[in-house]
Amino acid sequence: MTPSPEDRLVAFGAAERPTEGVNVIVPVYGGATFVRRCLASLLSHTPSPHRIVLIDDASPDAETQDLLDETTQAWRSRTSLVRNERNLGFVQSVNLGFALDPSRDVVVLNSDTEVAAGWLDGLIRCAYSAEEIGTCSPLTSSGTVFAVPVAGSKNPLPEGWTVEDVARAVRRLSRRTYPRFITSNGFCMYVKRRYLEDVGYFDAEAFGRGYGEENDLCLRGVERGWTHAIDDATFVFHAGSMSFSDEKESLAARHREILDARYPYYTERIRAWMDADPLDELRGRLAAAMKSGARPEDGRLRLFFLIHDGRGGVYHTNLDLVRALAPRHDVFVLVSNRRRLRLERHLPGGRIEERHFELQTSVELVDLAHGEYLAVLEGILDEVRPDVVHVRHLLAHVPRALDRFKARGIPIVLSFHDHYTICPTLPFDRQPRPLLRRGLQRRRSRLQFGADLVPDSAATERSLSSVVARGNGPTSLRRRRVRHDEPGYPRASRTVLSDAPRSAL
View (cartoon, rainbow, N blue to C red):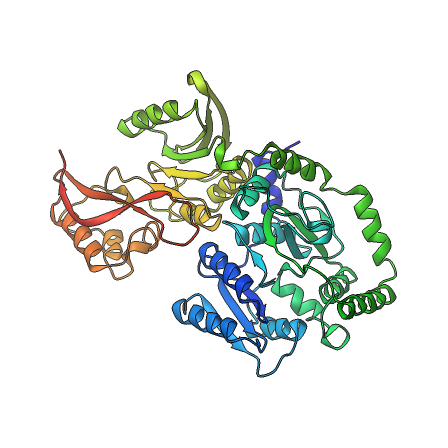
């Protein structure tokens, strides 16, 4: 049975999320074609303040070296490049990455992977769903028990499907049970900083040439009371080794002997897990979806609207919109009156299903964030899993909700209906109120909803200043639609401030 948002809140609140960004460590040794795909997906789907740390392990080809140079020069604010003077191998390279920033959680990511929208937020949510989870890995196309839909196999993408399609299907089909497993998988492994502080880094002396190092790291944690989880709602594509050389097979066998000697229960625990296979239901549902041939985006979209509990023009225009969309899409509306959230599901024929969530404290008009509101929202998003969010009005909601949508990689459409989105202390007059004055300062765009939605520019400042100068007269802001220009990002338009206000009709 799918947990309710209320049940999910208990799990989500079990541990705090990281306060800083996460370092994504990508060791690289040649393979420019794979690396290029990996970097394109990371740059499209890994938002700030997370950082991509590329470790060039003395790549033998100029193409890979040039690619890393070009990427880090073009994306200096989001990437770092570390170059080993000689080839150290995967294990020692990752250990270098672990030590770069002693305050951040890390993700170890193979360079032959491709991520999708919301991948990192999904891993964070899994890792922090319980205090005792030390590491977690997502589902993948090639990765032993982590592989879907067939475990232990290389699962090619279905004809006509993209990595985004599979990731979207997994998100929709998953029940987010986060099953526990004895280890994570090194192709993509989220590691909490507290775990590294307690357990240590990879054992480079025993596993210096790779194969088994992540298993050893995880098993050391198991013996100290930690657990490891599979993020059954996140999918990361992994090309995987096409074949193993005799040398690699011999190396893997020797390292397995080390693991069995150190942890005699290891093999038996894996067999028991595979016999039970907590992912069996999900595998079956995903296989059926793939067999049908219908890509997730070919079907109905899940549309999620935010609106306040008023009965003015915003309410009526939104009602017209959702009624028109309901026959073709799954339409959800989150309504807030500041003390209660109402989740509506609009069905064809004008029928509405409702659920209510009471808040212990009211959402104030000037609240940028509200912990209880955001926790309820997270649970609802887990259940609804929207494809697009349309914020019709922020009144009675909080601007930080937009951060949660962005972290999940959900396209946002933001509508401006009045002055509230710029400044919640209404009405305006010719003497700017304190909150508005702060909003007109250099980083003014962060006041309500973040610089990524309204550019921090002189043009924006002129627009806001003009609004104030006009006093209480009827004023509106000219609007324009823009599209995300990040590679691979869904083509969803968003409304942003233009250069100048104009008189309202």
